[in-house]
Image 1 (cartoon, rainbow, N blue to C red):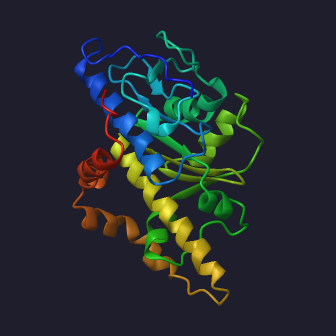
Image 2: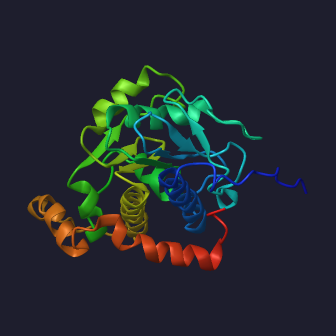
Length: 256
């Protein structure tokens, strides 16, 4: 078994605000692994570094998500170029989707992308996400779609992806997977959780083989108001502390 290279701790090196984002982002990577949403090393979560310098944090390419720590995350510029030394490379192609969203939306503090079985399965369906569950109603009120253009390698795709995303915080990438964004890691994670769960329910309901009952459009349109009421306006911050407690029981050590 090949041991992991030693990673120098950064807690006393970077500003406290950056360290907090590092801890939250590393936690998100490990939570994705804990929930079974990872795809070996082939998806990414990015977070904006506080300070207005257009710097971002992303995973070291080659580490599995449950191995990522706050110190191992790599700081990059908007073009995906590393701004710090690391024994691991960065996958610039993996940052194409993320950099497009970050560049277009200053308030996008975190962008999360997955290739889950349920997410890809729904992305391949012509009708996309169906209004058949309470969980689906929340993203359907403002859900974006982006057509498949092959592996996201080309910069010219960025403008089309951003135009398709518009003001939405959740997107289905056709034949590819799911994407969420938020002002912070907690918001982006909750947005992904809701979209992922809606996709899982849809695949399970369709497997039953019978006719599906659809939620009326008027109810779907009112779901954003209901979401604020249910969450007390706290969004991801309502569940994030509990998620960290769960993570501490299963994958401790992300904040190193």
